[in-house]
Image (cartoon, rainbow, N blue to C red; front, side, top):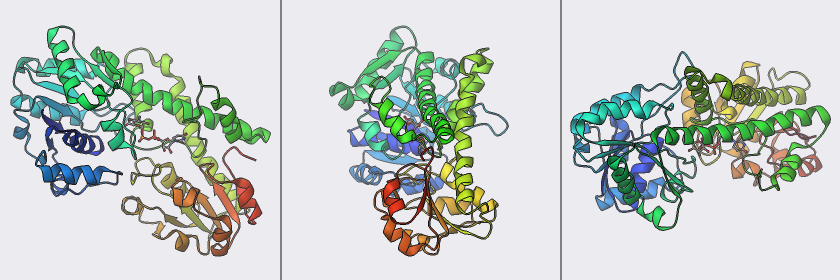
Length: 436
Ligand code: UGA
């Protein structure tokens, strides 16, 4: 099938390459010439496992190409809109500038029978407004939210755990749902749940899923705060409650909390939209979810200060990790980087390392000392703190080896990923997040 993907950021670039990899003929369109040049050369503009391969393959096969010219969308049966919806500069609501601009530019190139499939995360009600704009073209607007996780984006796109398509009532909607079923033929063929719903439900499914995940993380971080006041161990607590299949252990990782380009902005945009709908009370808890989350960053900083005897001033602190999570070079709202910057602000000499995110982090926070090599970064540290649980920090860092490099013996485990007993046995004063 011939497809266009408008917006080639994280979501769009992966979607375009993944759709080409399952046999579609795809054109990716973006206003950013540098991004288009990189993608056209088969080079992934960001770190995402597996993307490089399917991108290069798609370009070589001739099934995948990228352009800045929106006119090239003409002739595609489905146009995916995958542009960003960042938080507004002056509020919590989502900024819809890019979505509106993309649709306005696309309209002149639409033909009757085309399907426009929104993938961006938008406030509920946006799709209905966009449907009015494209109505006169004879194309049909559907909403097809994306649930991919960074680090697993290729797998999540090709082999998702569910597909959701919101369509308008009537035969156009039914036909569009069938068209999308054809786009996702490989996943549908494997029996992946294919949920056809109305536009508003589809928009809400996305924000509800992210709100739930954020709430789950903040719930366990709230328990970490209680554990800190009582001497309990939140990791054991999470294991114990996680055995209840109704609760489940995943996303009960207490630590410095969630960040990234999705969960933080999505819960805020959801609150803002609920207020507009006169239902602010219904999601008032999301404000607490946000507040708990942000407190954990401060707690991690406090632990470093405490470990170093009350002040980090002129102390060497090594921060392991900059990305908002492992297997990503994304530093958007990264709690890891935030902790590093706060420590720097308190007068610490911060050395930070990360297997993938140094370049991005340096651009935004040039004041920190970046070191590529983990062991080099550990050398001479008065305290070390793990804030992104990459394997080389979490599993592969032997506490005795770390002790042979560092000067001090203060280890803060911002992701509760280390074996506390092993670190203590190697002579470290170990601090976890909600662990004794
Ligand atoms: C999230 C959702 O998981 C995806 O389903 C969704 O499609 C995506 O947002 C989106 O809206 O585009 P992502 O931002 O890639 O995906 O990252 P997550 O894996 O959800 O992690 C988010 C943050 O939560 C990270 O900072 C991570 O370190 C943190 N986290 C995760 C915890 O602190 N504890 C946990 O137990 C799990």
